[in-house]
Length: 391
Image 1 (cartoon, rainbow, N blue to C red):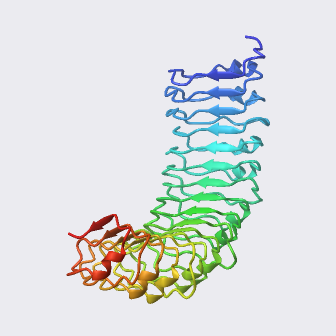
Image 2: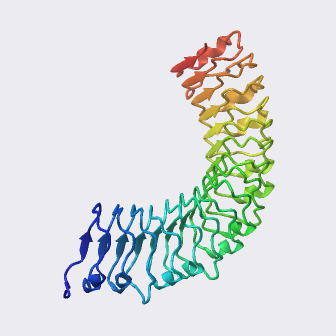
């Protein structure tokens, strides 16, 4: 009934509260309000927007909360808003009055279908989590720079495309689009995101192409295209100069790799597991000194190029169940740092090459399921071998 000027923290989580009194505005200095899993809560009073010092509002798991009230005046202190797991259908266009909002969480809002364009006026927004909003179909056009936004999570939404204006998210670092099965293409403007570090498109089963990369993307370090129906990588992939992790697991339409992939000097891990129509690995024309881990398991590759010797620091090589694979190049012995070689299930592999000198690093060799008839006598040079599988 009167001001409670000192109350800063109120936690009502897990209660069966149905509503908050409109007089909540008298908690003038309230900074933290938690209502996690208040499953009977259906609405909030408009007066909540008069809490000028409110910094964090957590409504996650309020599974019957359908609306967020209109924001009639600036809430300059609100930095963290969590509406995850609510049944909210839309955000009010007045969300732009949350001028200093930094984190907005809307994951598992399964009734949410769209976002107001005004969300793009949140200039200090850093993180936007829309993962598992399974009915979200569109992302609004970005009409002005959102210089602070560094993370967007759109995984498991039914989004069909990204707006070409995504280039205005100039400082975007992390973009997650995992299991977006309606996504068919990416705008070419995505390649103008100069600070993009992590791009995850795994499970986007209708994604057929990756856009041409027309300029350097110096910050992109991790690209996951696993489970897409991509047929080829663009030859300018070399412009991803600092790419460290490239995953193409179970890209069953992929038939070849561009030779330019070998110009990725900082590539550390290349995962091609289950690319069942991949027939060849390109010639390596220059040293790839950072590549440590190469998985070609489940491909229909027949041989490795003799230029594999240029993978000088390779430590793990996997060719599990490559049933068309028939022989290893003799110069595989030049891979001085190779620790693990897995050839299990290569049912047409008949020979293992001669080992010309001591191999100090190889400690794990799996030849089970091959049709190798005998080991070379030079196997004694594998002095540090710990595990040998041959069944």
